Amino acid sequence: MSFKYRSKYPIITNTPTFKLALSNMNKRDWAISIGLPLLSLPVGFAIGAPFRKPVMWGCFIVVLPAGFLLGIRDSARRLQGRRENPEEVAKYKYRLDMEPYQVRVEPLRKITEEELEEIEDNPRW
Image (cartoon, rainbow, N blue to C red; front, side, top):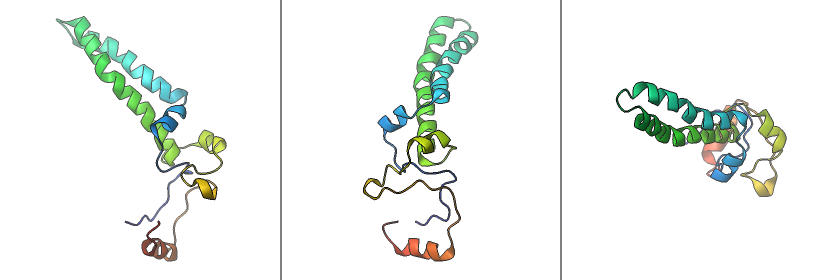
């Protein structure tokens, strides 16, 4: 498989671990992780007409892991360069998935036809 474009934002690592994504979560990610389940409490109470409290807690239990996964997903996307990541670029000067080479983080650029042919011919890409 060949890729014509690199990521729009600088890549920190292509494969972030759960621990790295968890430690990279910022205030917005935590607000999503905590805010969505808390928001589901009144929504569950409002829609659960005859059984308000069980529906309220049921909504909370269902939305709790979903909110956490959304926060982790956004954190991992910033590490992969799929979202804007100026804080991560300032924190990690070198790519984490290319440890022995100390490759600097680089932004988006269009790959030329010659580079594309080289990428297709080189199995390490």
